[in-house]
Image (cartoon, rainbow over all chains, first blue to last red; front, side, top):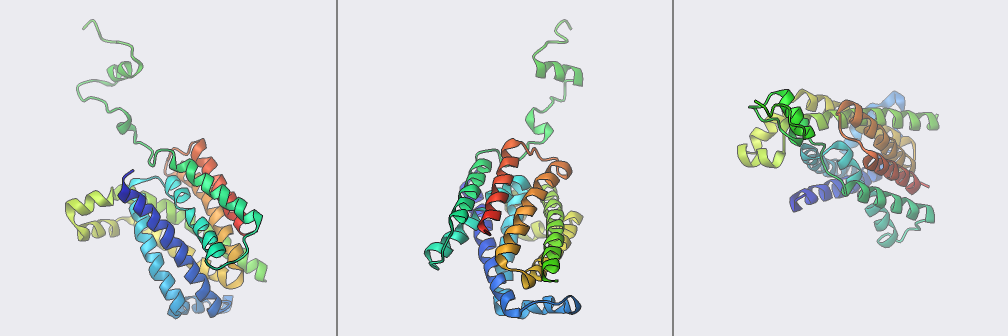
Length: 155
Length: 126
C-alpha cells in the first residue's frame, strides 16, 4: 500500500462521514416525506445542507471508485468504516455530547474490525497472478512444477 | 406507520446498496487501476472508459435508488437508527455478495472484520 492509496481511503472515510452528517441535518429541516408526495424527496436537493451533503458525497464517490479499482469490496468497506469512529469522537470532544459506554464499545469493535482487515491483503489475486503458466509448458508439466514432482524428466 | 416506513426504507436501501456496491466494484475491476490509467491515457479517457461500462451504469442506478431510500427512511426515523442499521446490514450483505458474485476471497479475517464493524455500528446507535 502506497501513501496515495492510504490518502484515497482517508478521503472515502472523511467525505462520507461529513456528507452523511450534512444530509441528515438537511433532511430534518425538510421534514417527513409522505408516500403520497414522493416528489418532496427530489425537491429536498434544493435545501443548502442537502446540496452541500451531496457535493461531499460526490467527492466520496470519486474516492470510493478509485479505491475499488485496486482493492476488494470486502477490504474497502471495513477499512473506510473508521468514519463512524471519527463522527463519535467529534460528537464527544468537539460537540461535548455524552457518549455512552455502549458507544465506546462500538468504537472499539469498529477499530478492531478496521485493524483486522487492514492487516490483510487489499485484493484477491487473480488465478494467473499467483503463478503464471509458462507458455512453453503444457498443463501436465505445469502441474508437476507446482507440486514439485518431475513428470517429464526423461525426455 | 412510522415504524413500517422507516424499516421499509432501510430494507430497500440495503438491497439497492449491496447491488450497487457489487456492480460498481465489478465495473472498476474491469476498468483497471485509475491511477495508472489516468497517468497513461489522461482523465477524459479514464472517465469515458468508466461511463461506457454497463456495470457502472447499473451500479449507479442502484446507488441512486439506495440514496433516495435513505432520504425517505431518514425523513421518518432517527438518524441514530437509520444510518447504523442500514450500514451494518449493508456490511453483512456485502460480505456474502462479494464472495458469491465477485468471487472475492472472503476469508475468516475479512468476514470477522465485517461482523465486528457491523456490531460496532449497531452499538453506536444504542
